[in-house]
Each structure stands twice: as structure tokens, then as C-alpha cells.
Length: 139
Image 1 (cartoon, rainbow, N blue to C red):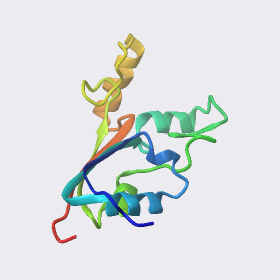
Image 2: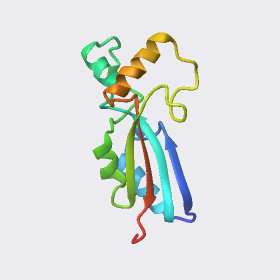
Image 3: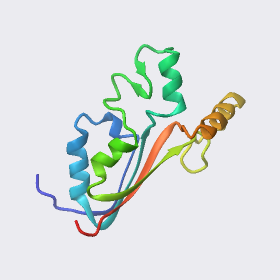
């Protein structure tokens, strides 16, 4: 497919885990970005506290860590994000706590969720994995 438009910034939040062909998706994102452009996104954090808790206390048979079947197709961690986009973008990945004022939930959190967020913050094991990247100039 021919690319007819390029973009300064490509954002995809809570999307990548639903994509059945993540390498093809990443290739298209890289092709559609302008030189000096960027990407911005987040995925469920497969290495986060929530994923870990769901592995040791399986309350939902459809869930495996951060993945909820059949909706989520793949789990991602910093190295998979790097593998998908690192040849084209200089990336920064970071854990996001559920109560983060920019990246977290918009709803007011109850005491249990505030406690959970505090523990996940101490462990550096947030609910989501966010990433931002700037396209490398040599592309």
C-alpha cells in the first residue's frame, strides 16, 4: 500500500495489544511518520503489579496477567516496544501509576485503589506502560 500522507505525531493508546499483526502495524506507523516526527502510546503493563497479581490470584479465567482474552492479542513490555519501533524512533518507555494525573484514571480512586497505586509506585510496576519517541533523523 502506498503512503500518501505523513504525520508529525502518531498517537495510539490502548491499541497495540489489540493488533493481530503488531510488526505490520509498527511498519506502517514508521512509514507514516514525518522526519523528526513522533509517536506516543501506551499498553497494559505486562510487568506491572496488576499483571503479577492476576497471575498468582486468577479471579478471571479469561485473564492472563495484563492480557484479557479474546480482546488482547499480545502482551508488551519495554523490550517489545523497542523491538517494534526502536529502529525508527528514539524511545522512552515508562511505567504509569493508576493515579497519575496525566496518564492515569479519570475517576476518583477509592482507598483500596490509592493503596494499590502507592504499592505499585514503590515497586515501579505501574498498570500501564507508556512510550514516546522521536523519529531518528537518518531515516
